Length: 377
View 1 (cartoon, rainbow, N blue to C red):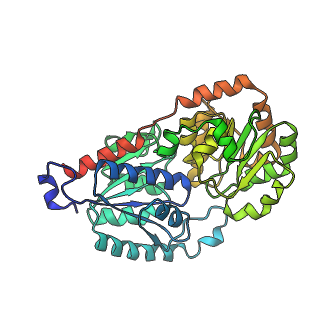
View 2 (view 1 turned 180 degrees about the vertical axis):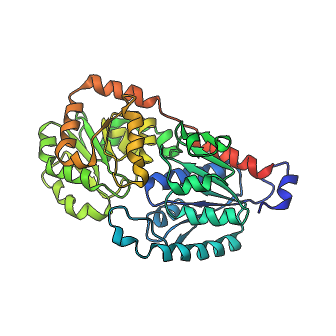
View 3 (view 1 turned 180 degrees about the horizontal axis):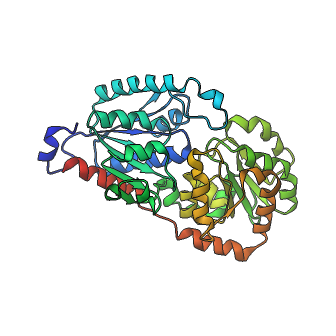
């Protein structure tokens, strides 16, 4: 419940507000959430922000690194690729609701923001049951069933793309894009400086492969099986493998000066600055691709909820703003598509121009401003 004295304050920074940001699982949820949190701190000095995520997921590492506290829920999401792994899901969900109730009763938030990922559902649902103001940011062009349900009782649903009124109450829905990290939005890193950072040469086209923060097996296998072909074509590669598979591929660096490979890229502003062409999944990362304006070959993850990554990708593909290779075709055709694009300067320029039309650069500011206004009026 909103504190009673909030409506009597004329300055937004004269009383401490408490906000929970719930969700995570992948960088596509975590980094926009951090952008929102940072902007809330900027616009509302003294705000107390607590993150709630899922134990064992990358938010438990990345959120504290950014200076915010986080509590992890003992919860798991629905596994679409292995149904037998869902046997214990109902019990984990029930346990998470008890844990969430304890968190809400202890922290007493004025508002809860859900950014996606399966840990956001129990937090927002319990908050709504307790009458706490809830806000949703839906980054995908096809929302999950949980967010559609939660959107009915949310104060505001912020969405990344147009046409979402068919899933959420039109009066509550606002198109704001997807928050992008300030380090990427305002990067002044030159390509020369970025290539030096990765130990690569100037004058060669550079391919950046980022299969999501957790890695992408189909992309990894495609690159590994065609690495020498990429080198023979005069291309060099910055390759984020994901933590689980780095050991399989880091040996490929031997004798290949055109290859940089690691499990995670901490300086994405440098990676984007170095790149001429980007290979990527099509979750939340596509909004960063729009901002940096680089030609992209998208490989949607086929097991994402409601196949939203394909829907995300097709918005760009249908506008001649990106290329697509299906996950099942990646091992055979991904590198072929990248090499063809590297040799087609006209197509590269068209993709650059068109993808920039999708860039929205003030999402975090708009979201934070509206949440604050709701809390002080």
